[in-house]
Amino acid sequence: MKLIKINLGFVQKFSIFFFVVLSIWWTIVALVLKNNYIHANLIWAASYQLMAVFGLIFGFIIARSWGGIRSIVGKTIMFFSIGLLLQVFGQTIFSIYNLVLEIEIPYPSWADVGYFLSIPFYVYATILLGKVSGVGLSLKSVHKKILAIFVPLALLLTSYMIFLQGYEFDWSSPLRIFLDFGYPLGQAFYVSLALLVFVLSKEFLGGVMRSGVLTILLALVIQYVADYNFLYQVSKGTWINGGYGDFIYLSAYFFMSIALINLGNLFKKIKET
Image (cartoon, rainbow, N blue to C red; front, side, top):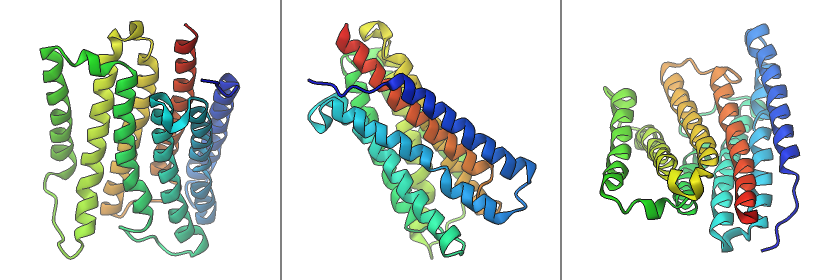
């Protein structure tokens, strides 16, 4: 397989630089100006998705260099990149409502098409990552089968008890109920899968894949926190465009971008050994 030559070290450094620039910009808008200039908040909130755009572009480039959908490595990186693309779709709709139409975006909205659909893509990409990391082979032992069953169940139960206990059902909006449950439970599922892959991948190639899986896990956890925080703030009426909730989303996009670059580096090293 002929790999496209990409200076991933430079790409990684640039992504870090870009994240720092966006973070400084947010610090000025949110902490120095204290969110007093709504238009400044909206411009930043519409701009930070460029971090995700940067990550998904290089994700697709790296995936293509591994044969794209024709190889499990290419498919893994591609599906994580599609997850980022769907997040960008949601962010774009969100920004059109707030910055162009200048109206408060409803919940649910068309933005949730992108946000929610990213969940199954992240789930499938994590399953593929497990296969690439040799997790399928290591699940043969009994105690790891038990781990594979109870870790997801424990996280799903914890998600329900912390985030959804005492939930008041408004059956006049069934789609909202579906999303309120679907977001935290679906994301708890892919976080638990990523945790399993991380724990079980230590026996594959001397654990060389663990750093890449750990970065993916961190990105998915931050994405989970970002979406729960959004749901919580919306329910309490405290969401501020360009506030700390948006900064959590920026962090999720940054770590996912770094994760895709790291995976590209790891797969390249494995191929060269």
